[in-house]
Amino acid sequence: MSRQGMIVGLFSGSVKKFVAPDGHPLTTAIRKSPIASGLLAASGFLGDASAEPDHHTADKAVHLFADENYSPVEARLGVALPRPAFGENLVATGIREEHVYVGDHFQVGEAVVCVTQPTERCRTIGRSVGMPKILKVLHELEVCGFYARVAEPGRVASGDPLILRSRAQSTWSIKRLHQLMFHGLANGHVVEEAIAIEDLSAEWKSRLETMRGRLQRGEPLSSNLVDL
Image 1 (cartoon, rainbow, N blue to C red):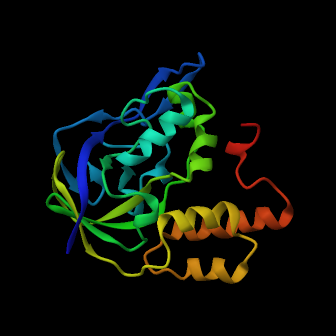
Image 2 (tube, helix red, strand yellow):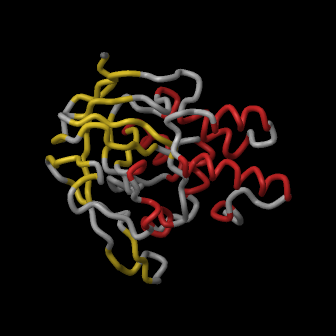
């Protein structure tokens, strides 16, 4: 086992309806509130939810984002962002996308989580903070965060160390998978290699095939990025 980093922020939140900065109503759980500690169960933290049921599954029970990612995003936008700006449950040091691999088991406090997939971002982020171009910035900087399933439930607190317990493979990092989704789908052999990753979520495997079909038909890979 080796220490990877430390949890610097812990967040949970239910679905809320509010008026977004664009003046239109927005129903989402992206604006989570800080908590000092919480029990991380198989379904995630108590009271945590998502407005979209498929965004909160066993493979996406907990959403992690690297604390180091905030500075470059804020520098590009020229503003300070609220924490958590991206709907994440855990903000931690030492978990940049290039340093985390699908199948990694991390001990976070008393719990153990297994990395399952990158996070594919949507327009809700930009609407919540009133900056539509933030989605484009995230894609250009290739920062996305990632989801994990809970392998062992336990209590987690801000300030807990984040420890790498095991690594099933060291070929497919979160960053490489994110790059594949938007820049590498033309290579069928590589796509099949990614789909064969045992711990990669079924949703992400299906998404790769869907996106590859769009590429072959000449369609935009993500409508969220059109006109940004």
